Length: 370
Image (cartoon, rainbow, N blue to C red; front, side, top):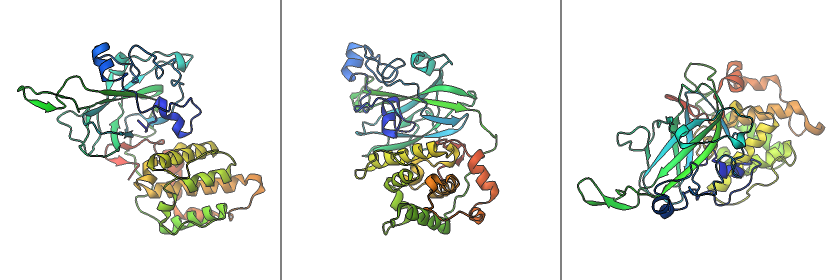
């Protein structure tokens, strides 16, 4: 589970945590270990039941660091990276941990997680009559974007744990009529991940709306020209959003605004590395002073789902950089008050205060990703 980042994968997104280079293998020690040795039992975060429980509270990867913050009762957009599609289904559960003195020592149990089996939002999955499961479509698709509804009865939670379960469907068995079929065996390979999140009370009961669902080419150009001025280099001869899609230019920009804010980022690779670049930019921009509501989701840029939100984020970053005037630098032209004309005061205030928090996703039919 990449979004929100599961405990063993947080290092990939710029968090100062121990790296788990084998973070795709939280599968209960393997199918035989889970079902033959442990009789179906597994650690709640995918570790072998017999241990070591490295992803559970007290383990090396259970740092207690909150990876994402959401608003109560909204639908969040999760991202799952499946390296081999073994069919089956996903489930999501939530445990609101109590507010003890140490996040590392709070006990997470399956009983707590089972209190909240979450419902799926609208998606391309066949529900098979069950709105708590996301069934994987057949094919070679790697990334699955799964909308999940947070319970409205949890108004706030300083430390909740979101559990992702993947019950595969590639082991043969027999159906109710006694016929052999793929995926019919009760004992299937299973994967589990845990993500540490926080939930805050919704700021408004009104449906969440976007600042704009239309592109503003003039503003895109303003932002592009500002970045070119800061970096002292021209964009490649491709559309604006394609030039920044891999996150390389964005990482360079943050290092220019705040030297060494991103010490290392990928300059080549594939979609996974470039998504990490975007996450590094988001973390650096947050540390620089941008609020969560002013940032964009990774899929807004990488999947081109909401380029206006990407542009707005960079526009606000430009204004913030001008206000800071770091090191007496005059790398960007002074931003006049007239620049605000591209967005109304109401829209800018919404960006600062009213939009849902980062990765908040949707509320019913309204969503942040377009």
